[in-house]
Image (cartoon, rainbow, N blue to C red):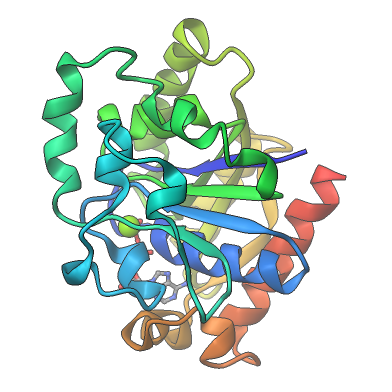
Length: 254
Ligand code: ADP
Ligand code: MG
């Protein structure tokens, strides 16, 4: 069965895009068929997958507005070999244009439905906001993965996200689960990071991935080459961490 995961946190810069790209590539490396959906107008997932967002005439924008099908728009990318539903700046307009449309919260879910069976995993990289685009991501998903940096305000932002997830459950998607919280850019020498990590495990017992993504320069460099880290430096700590995350996810999905 296909598993659809929304990678969400309304904070920017916590590692959503890095996780989306590298988890997608690691799942492909483990033999899975993966579609990666870029739901952020910044198009970082698109660029980081080696696709130049400036030269796309069709993106997820047309899909959300009902002008094109996913099959008209998706790209089979070479590095990583996952399929990509790309985005660019145009998507920012969809936020406003969708408001007047029918079923505005479930447009992504409905668009993915016909292609869903072709994939083992669909990963949705959400924008850094709790807006209509993110709501579309949460309505389309079976579960949410929340990347977070273990710093002072991290837990505070989480309660807004958890409340949004509860509202989505009530109104649109009763089965939506929190799949797990992922500690990213982790520096074990940082005492505060350790403390926040401990608090996280107390508050969200059983929901925190065992895999920890360390701060690793190779992970930050790879998007500049338009590649997942495993094609940039397969032996790096970053690459190994995302292999481990894919294994953990696969073990839990069995
Ligand atoms: P988001 O999508 O949540 O805004 P990104 O994945 O784009 O976050 O990450 C923000 C910045 O931090 C990017 O420049 C990215 O390359 C860098 N980054 C993300 N994860 C790591 C990591 N584990 N180690 C080092 N740099 C990272
Ligand atoms: Mg991002």
